[in-house]
Image (cartoon, rainbow, N blue to C red):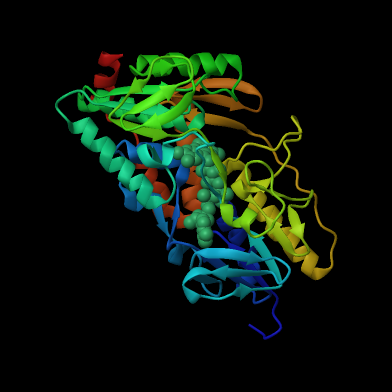
Amino acid sequence: MGKGTPTVVIAGAGYAGLAAYLALRAHARAGRLRVIVVNADNWHVLVPELPLYLAGDEPGSELRMDLRRAVQPPAELVVARVAGLETGARRVVCAGGIGPIGGDALILALGSVSSDFGVPGVARHALAIGRWHDAQEMRARVLADLEARAQKKVAVVGAGFTGVEIAAALAERAIEAGSPLHVALIGDHVLPAMPGDVRRVGESALRRLGIELVADRAQAVDAGMVRLEHGPPHRADTIIWAAGVRANPVLGSSGLPVNGRGQVRVDGYLRVAPRVYCAGDCAAVPDPHTRRDAAPTAQLALQEGPAAACNAVREMDGRPLVPFQPKERGFLVSLGRREAAGTIAGASVHGGDVAALKRMIERYHAFQVGGLRALARGLLRGQPTEARADRATARA
Ligand SMILES: Cc1cc2nc3c(=O)[nH]c(=O)nc-3n(C[C@H](O)[C@H](O)[C@H](O)COP(=O)(O)OP(=O)(O)OC[C@H]3O[C@@H](n4cnc5c(N)ncnc54)[C@H](O)[C@@H]3O)c2cc1C
């Protein structure tokens, strides 16, 4: 690669960052571009598959994909935690004395973190999915509750996509394991972003799994207890916080313009400053239908990453930028392994076929990152066996 080869730095190798890398891979292989990917850990986590992992289903090694396999030479992988950004100089400043790492263009794809929205006690008394070790801790706690002889109680706070998927995975697992575990889902509405018929299907599927639906909001979390806005305190051995996320705080603390959720305000090309782009959960991208900032999803991140990467190259080449137009294909939510519900192209769908479709969508991403092995392993795994399915039906 020549000395004057333009360099693109991608900060974050999640859904948006890796999709950006894949869009630039051919340029890197042809020697037209130097690509540097900076990520805090050595792995890419298949986040939408975490609910099954938390319930003890998936071997963790398959949900954590080795970035050294995914980011291949001549592209460079730097494992370092970005601690600050110098957007004027298009550089990331890393912890541990690494860097700064700069280039001719910068793509920020640092994802999001769990948010307590100011509810006291969450950080101290509840478990939230943050980094990989948080998910591991949550899994260990939940598995101990599942295996306990006496009845344990798990309360999942937040009845959006994440909370519903976690509660359903746990309840399904309890049925299959013959465990007396009690699962409650706390939120004023179940799947509030979904149309009415999907919400109703979701609620009845959750009830069939034996989940207690608590239509209320958390006011505070204490040891073993969620204090509710209206009802009496809800007691639980394990409290899982799934009420929402905010963008990685590094972006706001580096002086970038952010919205109330800490997401960077980008222009119609996903650009925040000359040759600096932002993609994924950490970018505030308006939904063309509602005009409000779109909900953070892997689906959107996978579109934004390549769009940001292509515009970065176009800008370096002096070519006109392409406006980013998100394509809303629908959204599916898992209700355990055997059922899913949601919308596809505006139509409401649910059932076992939808669960299989969701699984295939998730595995397609694994295939893009990890190749055929990842695809095959994941498709074979994650299906309920006949015996498990029978037990689940009997309990329902
Ligand atoms: C349980 C759960 C289930 C979900 N299910 C779905 C679903 O079914 N469908 C869907 O569309 N979406 C789903 N989502 C949302 C989806 O996972 C996110 O929208 C998506 O991961 C966002 O991609 P991203 O690239 O912006 O962030 P991420 O995928 O989170 O990637 C961010 C990357 O940045 C790295 N990073 C973070 N901080 C630093 C730092 N300081 N320095 C260096 N690197 C750093 C991280 O290690 C990570 O690799 C789910 C989310 C959760 C939590």
